[in-house]
Length: 388
Image (tube, rainbow, N blue to C red):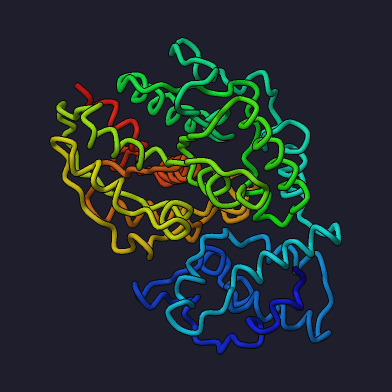
């Protein structure tokens, strides 16, 4: 595919503004547009940039590349546009990112992100030998034919807050008695963000490596706490011959509850609001499982933020921004906006189902001095604490 292949979409945009103000919520919908306050940073503006390139009215530049890579890949623009003119905004933006890669014109932080994954198997540029340290003393087995593979992902493996999520979910699995294992130090990045940053060659390499490893190990069923890994393994690996039964941790915990393998009897007395991750919600249509789990926990009062489900506002961590932090800083940073929305509900806990969201939102809570008003918890932590 090339930019010219999206000519129909680029020329079809009628500048309706749906990607600026979401029609479902009647609130600002684009993280990068809101952060920088310029039309170029909204999907409508990025499509205009693509139009300029196609018609030779503008030339490629590093400045253009910086604008394109501010996109957090949250899919809100496309969700809004689908309700109107159905322009494939994100496909256009992704092709712009791919062209930036081909031209060698990508921001330095994005280049470091991709090089870290290529060299170390993770964007943190940390040793692969440290990938399973999160599981120390838990008694989690390395995968050797168990029924389920728990694919942890880079954030759950290396980030301190992500590790908290990984440990909580592993403890839920251990308490349930299901047969599972982890790849340990053999696990590498799932590649979802690599693909979305336009590095198609590196993504193909990662996908093929993971598929080969899964098949050699006899893996057929995969569970993950990462909506990003969930999407890559479930949807993208199919193109390379990788067909696996994939569940996100919320879906799996709901199944455990239905089967009676875990029972939530300990009270968790809290007023809770839930943040829908972009890659679990808008990308993969899972909105109910997390809410049903929370409603099953004794003592929890679930309240919704104004923007929820398909209209949920992005934390700003997608598109590699959880490392590059292009959208960070200031009152208009997506995570800061989202945390204020959570505080406005009067909730004690902001519950997440994505390690990237956990990192972004917890940082925002600390930077805005909301620590006395709001705590961030992964849904696995809530479940673990409620199991009898």
